[in-house]
Amino acid sequence: MPFSRQEREYHRMSRRQHTFCRICEASCGLIATVEDGRVVQLEPNSEHIGTQGFACVKGLNQHHMYDSPDRLRHPLKRIGREWHRVSWEQALAEIGEKVAELRGESPHSLAMYVGTAAGFGVLHPIFAQGFMQGIGSRNIFSSATQDCANRFGSNA
Ligand code: SF4
Image 1 (cartoon, helix red, strand yellow):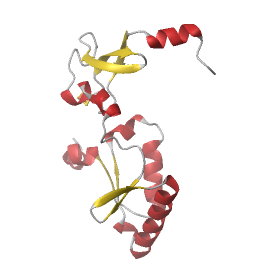
Image 2 (cartoon, rainbow, N blue to C red):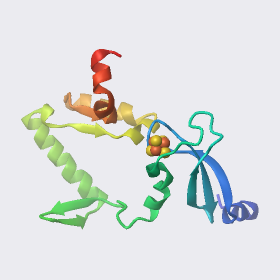
Image 3 (cartoon, rainbow, N blue to C red):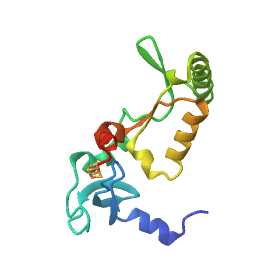
């Protein structure tokens, strides 16, 4: 459904919007300045009840990644030392073939790393776990494996 004139005007204006950082579980409170529908500045929110004005350099600069020339926007395949753009169909077909080949050797030759941001999706971790269980591999890791495996081990 197209935006109404009022909605278009709202998006064109510069405005400050309360939000929070989704990079890690700290979920720091931020204030975004939005111009023409684009985030142009992020500041810590000193009134946020949990983080009280804290935000790290990564969180405060995340809006720059949208325009980065290094942003990954499509599948790339490494051939020798170079990266070549391939279609999603080719990428998924070749990855599927490789996974099947490795699974045939041993399911445990396959591993998955689930990044922190996946935790913000309700179904992502569940599907990731289910996929690895279906393959029969015990090797699923996450940022918690790096950050707090000692706590899991000691049950602290
Ligand atoms: S601002 Fe930094 S510490 Fe806070 S949620 Fe984002 S990445 Fe995590």
